[in-house]
Length: 518
Ligand code: F6P
Image (cartoon, rainbow, N blue to C red):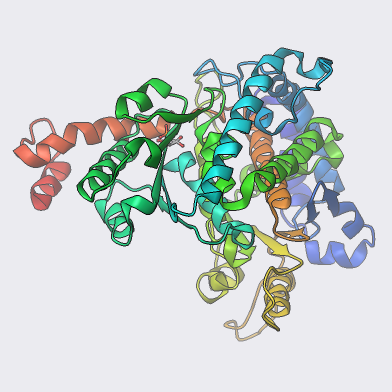
């Protein structure tokens, strides 16, 4: 049933007007000694403290009813059973399978994975080959620079993870990520490279994306023009389109499958830069961390299921409080690309305006996600978070142990994360106004014991499933992305017009700009 037609939705509306709207988390924390134990939880490798949110057990009980009435469990189970839940593309959605351990040697197949046993075998043979290749590159002293050419899911995940896991990075190798069709990016990267020492990874699920193909062609031309020998050794493809990679002239290809969405593909061959950076063992740990979270999401009762609790909170904020954005605040400099990664994950998945039957929605879906690492954000936009007219829920992520030994830094960093969450909640009163902080501004606080492949894997999987939950409530297809297509088609039409000056059929504004840019 559509969420806005369920009895739970109507009950949530009434509850919001009665008490939800004026709920004071500050007061609740003072009054209820059970609030913190109730709202914090340890999921696999991720600790979450949610008690500063504008929610109580009554709200959650109604949200759980909503989940039940919207069939969230059934949709989750359909995904894990390999059903084609991406209905507009008739595809299964099985990124979870990429992190599932291999089938048992004795041939025993767990009934739960009977449907997908064949795919699991293919996953592991590709994974083994990809990781063996990563090890070869790691020990190849001639290769000092790895250039990943890809965009969207073929860039954001690997780039984010290579940076995040810098403490685990193999010495002697530099990693570069080129995504933009803007030649400034590729040119700046190539400036300091020597073809002899460079390995290009051409990462594209489809192997048709304009940006990636343009950059790949230019990289090949640069390689040859600068005395590069043995293209086959220096170019590798990561794609589902093996034939197109061959036509491009690449022999070494690591494949994956159409049931892996681009924004869910870091766990597949697209993760090769990560595997080269942190090694086969590290990559397997990242998969294991994610798998532990998959099992939590698949089996924990909804009320004790972290991705479910977060997804329901997202619905409560978006559809009842009317909050339109969420700030991601990782207090770890190595997580600087995490907000960008989550932007694609959530906004490309849930930025939809029709339901599974193509019918327009009358309620909001994906919020805007944005953010920068702490403490940088504090000196930029936190002013607005504390005193602006809009309420923006903030998500803090702190890591208990540092991977460096510079004295004094880490306690300062952690103190700032705690203080910002505390300031948002507590506020401060000032009769004169300018120093008044309204307080009661919601935040969630996540803690990882360390930033390792395992904990990162678990945290990313938690986020994927949380996006799944809100998407399931909203009754949308979180796994297609038709909204990116129109602009691509129009750009193809406009490109030759920039050369010819032909503006026939263009609107007056676009025609004027085209002339201005010629
Ligand atoms: O245009 C959006 C998109 O299709 C993303 O979903 C995807 O991650 C990205 O482009 C790159 O696609 P590909 O990996 O096929 O080059």
